[in-house]
Image 1: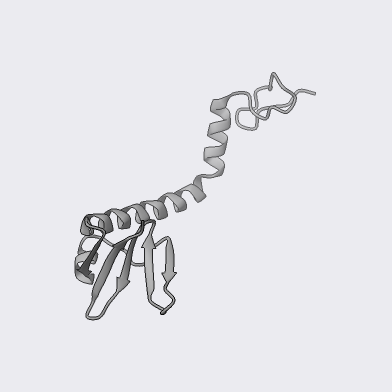
Image 2: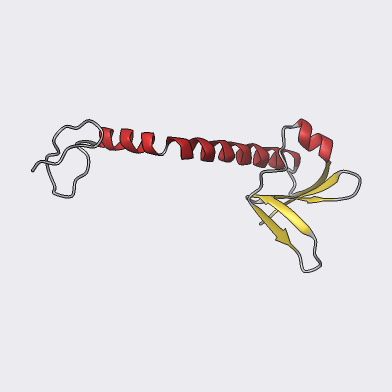
Length: 115
């Protein structure tokens, strides 16, 4: 009994545990199967990358202040961050990879870079 490629239905020749007839069919199959997940992940990663670039551009010296309006006008989205760090005193920093921000009073934010 010959196994058939799940992508193109051609017979599979070679090792007994081979699942596809070629690398091209394997790639096509996996791209099609993972498409919906990849779009979601790609959109989130793009959001995170944009937020990181904005924080890095506004914080060239590893520690500064900025306003909420300045962050938003640059396209920053406060819904996307990679981690939260809470100090022993209860201060909460939000991080996008190594770039972080701390909400202050009057719509100001402390921008920091984690070493």
